[in-house]
Each structure stands twice: as structure tokens, then as C-alpha cells.
Image 1 (spheres, rainbow, N blue to C red):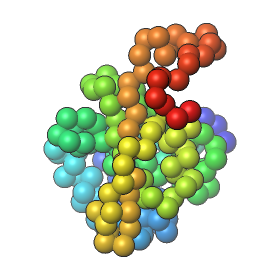
Image 2: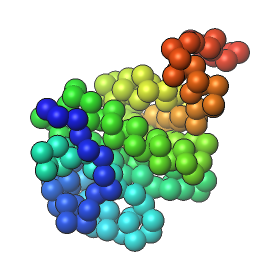
Image 3: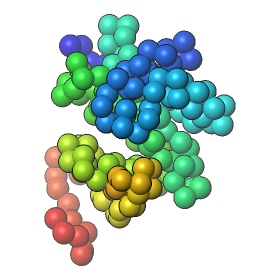
Image 4: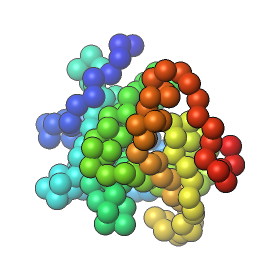
Length: 177
């Protein structure tokens, strides 16, 4: 598979992207039908939300939904990140997340998201990319499900320089690394 192109999701591709998300069992559990997603995306875009798509060979293989001030009316919130099962494990989620982070950190110091507390694969994915679990919300989205709140802070210039040169900084005082 070729590397995905990350673009703003064009309105004409909302249906294709919504079908990709709605067809996955995790999102079905949240009631995310294609129709609900399309309607929500349309309203979100009108309110200033951003939709990103990963495109490979002209097809949508991943989608992300960012709400500019969706976390505490202050910080960007990654409301959804989904990858087609056929593209899982091929860097699509990583590329989408990197584009979301770039967009978010141009505007704010933090990016937040919720992840189902029992979805260890997703939580691990975000942790490997620098997100930290900062709390749990019980029964927030659905009464029977718990969500983990995750946060990533904008990397400092020192962090970016260390990453570019391959050097490492010691973890901050009090961290559990």
C-alpha cells in the first residue's frame, strides 16, 4: 500500500468516509450510523470543525474529526479517528494523527481525546504517540461504557530538537516513566 495522502475531507466524500466508520463494530456500539455521521459532520463543518481524510489510490481509508475548541471550550478535541480494517497497521492512523496534531498545535498547546477505557489497542496507539491518560469519565457517552480522557501537550522546541537529533531528554520530575 502506498503512503496515504492526508487531505481535508471533501463534502463529496462524506458518504464514503461515513460508511467506513459506521461499518466497524466499535462505532456501531456508539450508534454511529452513516446517516448520523453525515448529518453530524455537516453540522460540525458549518460550526468550524475539521474533517481529515487519508486517501490511498483515490479511496478514503481513514478519517479524523477535530473540534477546534471542543475540550473545555479552549483546546482542540479529536472526536474521532478511524481507519479501514483493510488499512489497519499500515501507518494510516499515524499519518492522520500527525496531521491532526499539526493542525491542533498551530492553534493551541493541548490536544485532547476520549478513548473507550476497554480499548487497549487504541489507548496504546495514543500513548506511543505521546498522549497521557489524565482521567476517566464513567458512563459519559453511553451509560455502560467508561471513557479515558487523554491529553497531549504541544512539544517544546527542545523536545523537537531532541527528536530531530535522536537525543533523549530525561522525563520530567514526578513522571512515572
